[in-house]
Image (cartoon, rainbow, N blue to C red; front, side, top):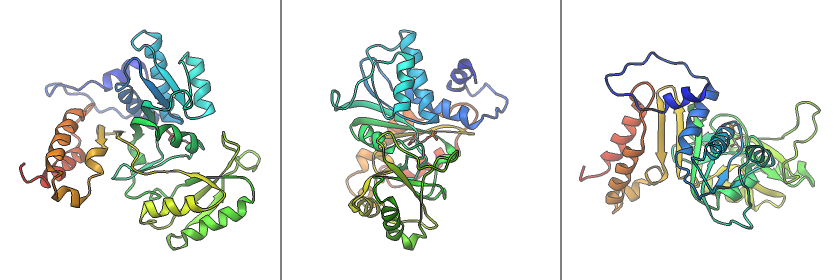
Length: 312
Ligand SMILES: O=C[C@H](O)[C@H](O)[C@H](O)COP(=O)(O)O
């Protein structure tokens, strides 16, 4: 996909314009979400640079805008050795959390996104550095194509990764599996397909991939239980961390903001209504019904939130 195609896709068409339907590949959708996220970047920011095939597009775009002089004085904090190398090749100035403990904005992909903007990350093995960097940022923008949306974490049937120390990894894997026996959990050591050797993270650890047959239920409880196991370094559930999720799909790009999606029914019935209205206004302005046609999911989402707000 050429740069001009992405830029054209990011323009909001006027009602009178009719475009022929365009079939985009998954990688093109990732690129559209990434470019949209980079619109949040301003000169002078300290940026968390994510890892993976989606985040790669965002890092490329930041490099391009720096080269064109459209962005200046950016400092990048990479979340993996791979992203570090990519950023160096693009001439993006880099630092680390020791020197820059507060990050203005991080942009990264995700493996799963639930309706409350909780995430699974780490199928590329970078979850620990990602969680450290993204836990230190003021704003965390997640970029995905719509295939990443799930009803509940683990719902894709694919891996929920846990980074562990290599020492007695079988013991730790068994304990992880036992924790989620009721959810039909199967724990597998991640290996390289070429030689069957254990996959080793940037931090010289192993990854145990957890596969669930059923919903694990209380994610906070699941997170605490995993982190209590000696031998576990970190897990790939990113709970309540994303501030914005940008989803590129066949119907266009949708932005979901944490302020709306993290609100519980109890909060809705209480004095959160004014805030909700404020957020809704912001969100409506921030939403971009671009590319092809109206996003019906988006309309449902706005109506649902408005329903809870008596003054609307
Ligand atoms: O460890 C990898 C990261 O968490 C990635 O952000 C995640 O796996 C999504 O990667 P991709 O954009 O390639 O689907």
